[in-house]
Image 1 (cartoon, helix red, strand yellow):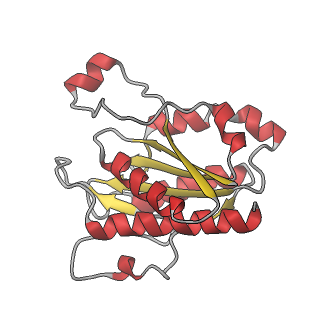
Image 2: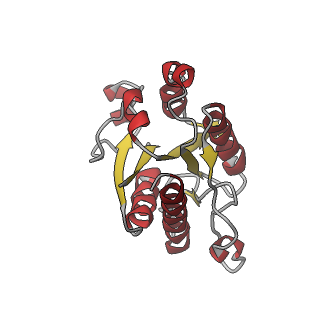
Image 3: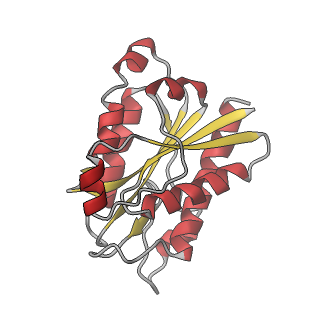
Length: 200
């Protein structure tokens, strides 16, 4: 069986919802198993609660040691000033041992993100995550234009050839749209299909 990990960090639930859609798409591919895990929260419980963080997330906490057991890793994190949230950066900054051993070389890597605004750094965040995956020797799968939803101009929508995205609104009140979730499902399916070809 080809094994896919959807690894995410979600502050307010937007990326959690996208992660579920990515996993749904990956699970639609026969012969593929999918796990959803999240990285550890690095802010205190007190700060998280006072800031309105979504604390009731079902996904278990991932460890760096988990990574080597998957054929593909799809990484999701919100944007902070044009780069991935520190919680996700912190997780990958602990993967030096995996890098030294080449444990992720030849596996499929992919990324998805969210921003408050349309031009809030979605593509720079995705490229930053992709750079990290490339340093590990991973083979990158994005969100190809075969998914036409990212070309819509009749509604505000996320989506990029570098990966699925969503726009949350400045106050975080906008949850992923149907179109954005469909992009996430497409990406999950595409990554799973690619990983299955490479690691049947």
